[in-house]
Length: 234
Image (cartoon, rainbow, N blue to C red; front, side, top):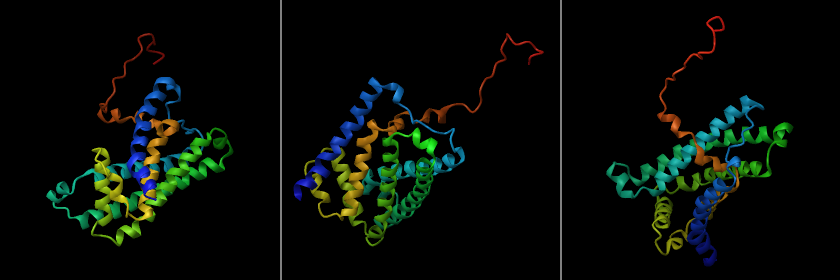
């Protein structure tokens, strides 16, 4: 099975990155009108607000946490006074809490999309698939917590972090680093990479259009009275 390990953890990461960037560019270039989240907000708004907020907080928090945790060299957090064990405990607690929020939000969104006939009619098959896939990935991440809690020395965490940095730096032999990692971590990695592969072909492409520019917008707005409106009309 060495060939499968080499493909999944030596070649597949680059395939996903290529599809993520080039596929997103091609979709923006050829079909900009499909570049949206395709919201169904006008239907069952209250359940959407709760489910969507919990789901997005979870996904964004986990993405930032995984990125920082996997790509930060040990020397950096050691310099900050954080030991490997402390980092492992921090990852388990915060990651578990965020994943739990995501599961709750995912249940609300899945129930809303599958049980409401009007919402189901406006949903594409890919909408339902990607929601179920992310929900599965969250549950899979939670299933790694018992294994992680039994290895507080960070054995697997250090290996996975080294693999992540090796992939980004195009180092040879990256796949061999995770050859002995338990299957639950490997499956979690493969599903995570697959999410990037799916972005250009699903509503996930709207991650490129996240309204982060709102953070820098002034809190005040200038409102001018229309000169054509009479005082009586005002």
